[in-house]
Image (cartoon, rainbow, N blue to C red; front, side):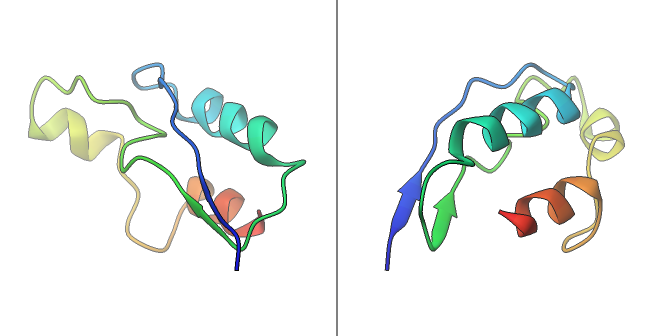
Length: 71
């Protein structure tokens, strides 16, 4: 089993850009499990809970989940 780790510096709130960056960085690698930071897509500088919720997808759903699942 190959476990791969990827550390990124996400651009806050730019989910599509951040996801694309990860996909581009790892798409030519071979792995069974890819470990990413918990907020690799949204970034970390939330003003409040409402802002965090506005950038979140339900667990196991959403565009980010679907793209990561295809890796």
